[in-house]
View (cartoon, rainbow over the protein chains, first blue to last red):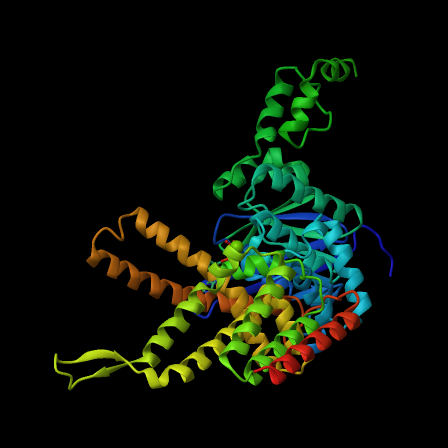
Length: 290
Length: 248
Ligand SMILES: Nc1ncnc2c1ncn2[C@@H]1O[C@H](COP(=O)(O)OP(=O)(O)O)[C@@H](O)[C@H]1O
Ligand SMILES: [Mg+2]
């Protein structure tokens, strides 16, 4: 198979889903993930982000429409699900509902052991996964003695150890302090650099703008907007209609361009930090000369 | 409970093979029951406690704190065995000591004490996870082990949930009067039941997401020089039993 960047790995096509109590989870929802892309799903609470993710991993079956992995509709048989879940990893929002075992290393081994791998292979994967989230030192700690941010990273390691091709994270930064957010984003950055396809839900617009390639806005179970992350500055109306705000830097930068601080047409900064760096005297001089 | 847990994780013999530690505890238990007199049982208890202290590096004070609940229980049981209630006494119903029971009670108590020290040896040197892993190797039924794993993990999740809920209730004066306290406690129990249900649902989902379709299995840690430890444990355990059998 050719690995071109336009190839769709995972696709949700017109999926509808109702919970048993009648509330609408998804309503003709469609989304496609390109291989190696970073996509954010934006949406207010109760929009259907979690429901969408549960469909991607085969935990919920669509009431209507279908989910495709690498071009093929999901096979909901035992073998098919097994295959899917080793390719599409899902990190839940609440770490306490994902961590079973009482020690870090054991918990991370849970997925690979379920895949039926040999001890040595499991061991290697566990160490590698712990390493890539920077939790090697805590490997023998009991889970209940970890901080919230550390638990979160153990959850990610638990999924990484299954070596998925697509990683889905449900509001990974919710409840993390700024430093832990940065550390987490670094982990995601590294995974992206290694070619992982990442889908993440958040309602932190600044974070979404700084990180994503693609954005998808959902509300009431329906996809109400899909756009490339470069277009954030032009989506103010749409975002506000659905209870979200424009990223801070996307609000400021056009004003600075209008005042002639920056020349028009240059690539826009994606975060306030980047903007601040651009405003430092040398950089500014450079930008104006260009 | 939490104290035991903390010491078990931090103890010096954490990395010693759980099989060896389990075997030694079992030998200790056997020796205590093979002991011919209260004095021997008492000596064995002292030896086991000393080994635990030396092995784990836990201080005597902390050891006693961990043992306190069990010792209290032992003391009350001893008291109920020793005293009996007489209803037809001259000054109405009264408690009185039964001297004839004394030797038997002493024997039962020292044996229990010995048993307690043997179990504490295991509990203080071996975290729960390792014990579960050991039981798995000994072919304990998977269902039982899954329940142990989940209960153990859930204890911490729920003690946190209960703590948070209680604090939130207290912050809004939920425990200001006895009446309110009773209501709050009821609400807490109801809420917790709901949470248990939801939590079990999400744990199930999370297990499925990581491809689980049977028993909860994990990678078992490996222990350096497991054979040597096992041999040491067998030897020292056997000598404890021998000691108990020959001395009176
Ligand atoms: N287990 C459930 N039972 C009934 N309704 C649910 C359940 N989970 C979610 N919902 C409903 O489905 C909708 C979408 O929820 P969810 O996917 O959790 O949203 P989000 O993750 O975006 O906050 C909400 O209206 C919510 O009330
Ligand atoms: Mg959600």
